[in-house]
Length: 421
Image (tube, rainbow, N blue to C red; front, side, top):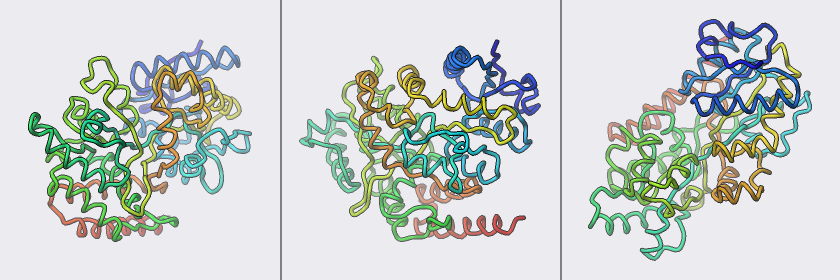
């Protein structure tokens, strides 16, 4: 009989709670997710006869990462299979901790090719597969756009600005708490995701193709000035954007009927359509805008499944990966949990589209996905960016100064890494 093991066992004793030789997976998190993973593993056991121990993951991302690091740094045989945030894969693969999947016959063809290339390939080798994918996108009040004579959402940031100014001014006459655009600007990882989308849509970015920092570019300066102006000049975004605005704070402002546009992840769609939602039936979804001459960009998010290079059940672990990422299981994740499938072919499923027509839009959004830098020192880069970008949004630093200082600090991180044996 398969067992569910609490994550504390992994953190404190490096998976010492697992039975010796037992196939194990680190997954789950919330009680609902954990219960669903138990059902998935029961199906796997019924179809293969292979018993699996579920090591329940923590709820918070940093605790999840700590559990992964404890196991892989310690070269432990358990867990054999793990779910990890897309931003971690580069670090783990660079350290040689992930089992190459290609030699085991794992086929990435049904998945988003761009996502595979950007996130799951390391030195030309497949090391993971997406269980579900995320990307930043634009939510908008379709009823308000129509009422004010707009027949489609904005395609450029200037169009968004002009539309938001006009409708915010009109709505303020009856709702002084109404805002044109809400997004994630607090000092945390979500700010980096938002900034990456602005940077890339202006023709900039965080690092170049060789992994060298390119923060102090004219394109990035333009984008960051635009982000600052949203708060301080145009006053289309609330003044607490840089202190309080994370995913849920942004969602609640929009869902309460107090915003025209919202940048958020796909999860917010289901909440906006809940029976008691003030905006139910009044929301549209579109790719994020871009600057003139640029292209829409959506920061790649989501969770991917990998096999530990130290697994003592590699063949069975690969079978489990193939099962988790199969068409039927991916479809069920979407139907039952609302997850966005990692497989692109599932987005053509008529039953799934009938239940969630937003998936047709998401399919195009994920085609424009851009990753955070897949370098082993990304967490250090992120810490620098969170501080410097937030200082610019708060008005403590000028955008150009903030990016110049960030460039210097990230270059120093790269130098230290390259000179560390």
